[in-house]
Amino acid sequence: MKASTSTEAEGTQAPAVELEGITKRFPGVVANHDIHLTVRRGTVHALCGENGAGKSTLMKILYGMQKPDEGTITLDGEQVTLHSPSDAIARGIGMVHQHFMLADNLTVLENVVLGAEKLHGIGGKARAKIKEISDAYGLAVRPDALVEDLGVADRQRVEILKVLYRGARTLILDEPTAVLVPQEVDALFGNLRELKSEGLTVIFISHKLGEVLSVADDITVIRRGTTVGTAVPSETTPKQLAELMVGSELPSPETRESTVTDTEMLKVDGLHLSATDPDGVVRAVLDGISLTIHKGEVLGIAGVEGNGQAELVEAIMGMRDPDGGTIVLDGTDISHTPTRKRREGGIGYVPEDRHRHGLLLEAPLWENRILGHVTEKPNSKRGVLDNKAARTDTERIVREYDVRTPGIEVTAASLSGGNQQKLIVGREMSHAPKLLIAAHPTRGVDVGAQAQIWDQIREARREGLAVLLISADLDELIGLSDTLRVMFRGRLVADADPATITPEELGSAMTGAATGHLEHTEDDENASGGETAKGEENASGGEAASGEKSAEGEETASGEGTAKGKKNASGEESAKGDDTAGEGDEK
Image (tube, rainbow, N blue to C red):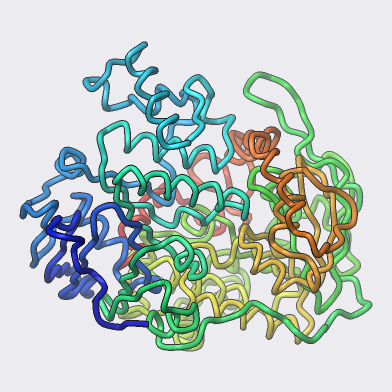
């Protein structure tokens, strides 16, 4: 590995991107300090760093969303000043954000041309251009498909096509594999190699070091807001790259010793839940779900997003009232018990979307510590909020869970994604839960924060905690789980032994290509069946999660009301904050 440079321009060709001495300050924090980045034309350049390292801020500067306080931007040998994303697009820079920016109720064609109508109109010329780009780069995009009917992998390809349609020669991809199964990751990497072969440049932001090493030509590592080195993938191991990123060895989710007991903590039997489509069609989003989690056991649920995992969590939390079946927690039937009583009864909850359901982004950290636990110590005393005790306990959580913050009075929005997640995990573990529901607990979290969260789950499991783990990270599922189940179209269709199953075999079952008990086979090549199901990955579930989660009057994790009548994890009204979090993600 080289911790110096690997950025010599090939021949006399100017680099696609040169950032020199980039510095960006926000109140109370320096997000970027004297960053240097050189990206060669026609390469895949990976940008690695822990949460809060400044990756997103740097890319927002390159995309014209933020203006640097110091430093220069040079594109194809010409020094430029970017005042807005429009300037960046005009200079051939395109960005695919981690959270897709697509309108579900429009077709692929309508999404692609939206805001770029002057280029090729909105009719036949636009359709021909989309087909031309799709064929040239192997994107396999269908112009007339509704976006709401597409799975996450297809949506991602639409986002890539959107930036290519606008003439981008340099693409910024922010955490592009976060929600993809292994077969889809392979397909994405195939797309990236196709883009590279056509002379395009890709800047690839990722926490998944194995993927970075497999697809990148060059790697730049950022730590604490500044560049600490570059690496050549062919000469670098994941362990070395992790040490460069966070100064420590790459964590592993592997759990060696079994702590499973015979005591049932959660028993779900024959759970049914129906929902009505926008078209008025009633269908089952949960169809006869039965599962048991014992004390000291981690039950992992694998599945492509939108196949009923979110609805299962909402039914267990009391945010949705099931049509049939029973939910028993520690011997008590809680099938129709209010959310707050379930919380007080010992359910901890790390939500899938921390911005929407886990935090009040514009509130200080100590108020966020209270969310979902307003009636419990130390947050309240004899029915009255105890702000002083809540503040003191927030300081303890910040200290014990290594939440990096200037203080507990700053807003949750000012923290990076990983620090927001550590605050949530600390809050939920502080009430000694019997059952922890962890939905994507390390999504968008760097290796350092990931290791801490895994350690907390392992420690609590040793002490008898039952855990329901839902994750798109198959290595995490396999490493942490004692038992694995696969969810497809609202049903539990397969189970597997985490000790023997591979991510590829699990990914195949997630697309519906395998059912029943999954046995590990030496010839993993037979997992290719998973790819055949790619078009149906969301056939039931893409709509399963969309349009129903925000139904008026539903409860969310605290049992309190919000502006639309949907209760959220705060126990407070939260009309604000759903989408405001972006600013603080990498400060």
